[in-house]
Image (cartoon, rainbow, N blue to C red; front, side, top):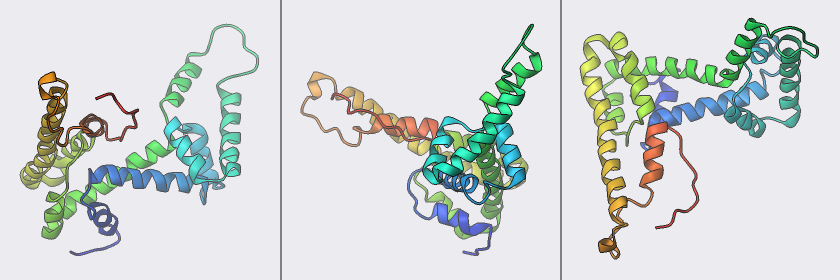
Length: 233
């Protein structure tokens, strides 16, 4: 399989053939972004301007706290809080709230530097995957051998395939739909079997692969694994 600076990270992600490769890709990009923003980029003025404007979601704040030192996180927060104090929450107010300030607050509430960076990098890597699919037979084989593609990333792939791949969209769609659809069918069977096992007539029956079917179904639907308390069976 031909490799270059663009294809190497893609091949690394697809190599394990476990779970959804695009979830692994997203997780890798998230971790790298959390390390980047709390490390080398922390003192870069242009990055600090952007993080002050965009802020971070709770998930990525948690990742940043694990990835960087408490001092690096405190310095990021110091300037971010200062910007909010100066522009969005004044100490003294009079009259009605400014509509522009309310709009800025709403925008900040739904904004995250890491989310934006991961989305940009994911889109770039998906474009590389479209190209590799068309040019590299070995990658097409590797792609088809993945365990499944989750619903979120199935949607992502289909949304850009036609524009990027043209006449090759059909074959890509067939394989991608088979990966998502085959696993969906497996999940449906396992979840249904799990439900049936609560019928008293199946008290001594075989649970098969159904015991963790709820968690696997949620991960397929949301692209994120879940942690739950042990449910009563």
